[in-house]
Image (cartoon, rainbow, N blue to C red; front, side, top):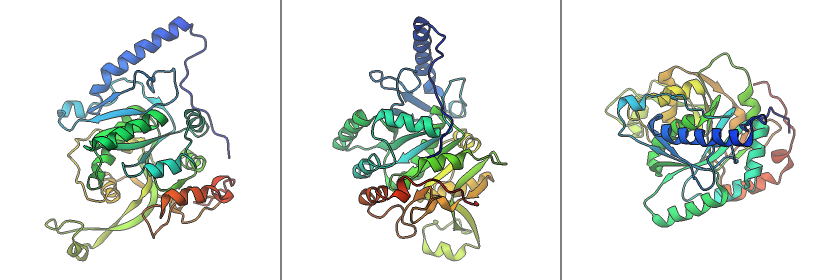
Length: 345
């Protein structure tokens, strides 16, 4: 695989141990005090395992609260001087309580299961990875999740109900939380049922672009509806659509930092939410007049020397039978270890 510039957050070796300790303690205290006021998000780090921003440990899981009741002044507050983790891109792998097997397969394939491996992947590619999941009232499921977090420590936990009909809300919460925690050039939403080549994704995101507001994905067309009395999912509304807009397939897409900062500065209820998360994001991007960058390497049906994301398009919304297919694909040299061939896109 190609080499990449390394991203590091370690303290300068010229500081004494006492100085580093004082800086560390002060930074962590400032982090805890200010985090409640950023983008209506309150981030809490596990004090027993070390915080992600405290420079003593590898990346850790984090729990983020999305407060819909904050006033406008707090919701529109940007950064407030808090130093965020610097990476080229943050990749949030959207997952759910019924996807334990998928996560198990992912950790056996392209996503390392150990902390050191995850740290090496981040340093090699400039990409940080976390599983992103909400909450449930089922205490047994929450208990199982807590065990998994303790074992692997690779989660972003959102204080929002994990429900398929509420995926657009989860997606907005994800982008707000990601921006609060990471200083990135891109923020990537990915599903837990695709086979991904992180090295190739890194190369794609690192390319120079003339537009600062970029919506990157494998694009498809969807109808624009002209009758406000009909919902988008009602069959009659399709007959009334006279124009079409491009939007990315849901399994993976990326938004540049300038796009995400526009999202996090808005009230949580200021955008129209559709039932489909990818249609919702596509509608928002159309309204924001961002640059759409179409890349078919993000929706390959088979592994190739240039494929970035592989899933069973159009048969399934991701890989069909992902728990087994992820393992099968990883055994193929063309999927897991082939050199990258530059494409003309």
